[in-house]
Image (cartoon, rainbow, N blue to C red; front, top):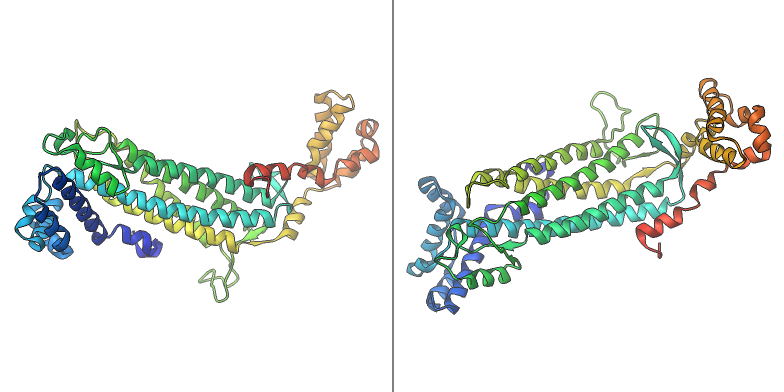
Length: 433
């Protein structure tokens, strides 16, 4: 991933130095298990543990000749260890190292992403509590619908990312498996106890049937989960982008001192961060289809999955890490305009209370179809002329006969829309909220 959208901790996880260090750990743990089984001399394992090392540049040099990365690594390792290196990789195949390493990297990446989600959840909860009862208009089809609160918008996002957290925990568990089973996964030349030992040391579960490679349905689920999280990022980013539109302006990204919005128009304050997040979400989701296609490998294994995983494994996790961190920052610094929210809420002169009027008329004995017609005809007149909806209703004899002036006025009370906000918050955050 390009440095612009990468953070150091996640980037380091995917660098060659980290990858080869994990490979060395796998090989070393496997040798320790083989010593216990009497397959490998203890002094050989000791030599690898004490002198084991590698040189990335040297591995690259060897690979250019042998065209095989694991062999290149083992050759570089042998150059550091000496004759005892002949006991390294006994009965193992390349996928034992590659797949186990990849799953280690993905579980560690998941841990970073879980911490990112936790930071975002904290920010969302804080803003939800802050604006729990801040009125704003709810929209369906981008059209004014009924009143809601800005706190409920934040609570919805919190609940969504809380679900995403649970999904990622499950995906982490599913991907955290180890395979040290040899060619075609039959353990013909290696004892299953070696796999069990490596799995324990690397904090992984044993892959029940590896067929030489770890089944890619696990990886498909992992990257599909990242794709869902990316879509949730975009959902919230799009909401902010719409709220920042000039004619809406209910909330906007923080615009720092010295920041410039446009090279041509000095007045501009653009939602650049959330637009950026919309784009980055596409990058993460781009990994989902290849991950699904990787499931169908030939027979016990092929390497059609390898090249794409080397690209989208780092790219998807690095991008999502950056995006989650950026979104948390956007939420924390989001500038909210309650006055603008109220002004927009009042823009249609009370039309947003039409459902209350409809229901009240039916409660007074009016047939629903007739009640709908009575409410709608006045609403359309208000929409067309800009006349006060309340005044139009009071001038409508049919409505007045059923509700009266006081009954109409009572139905324009904003608080009736917020009677159950506490219930929703208790569901999302718990009764302590």
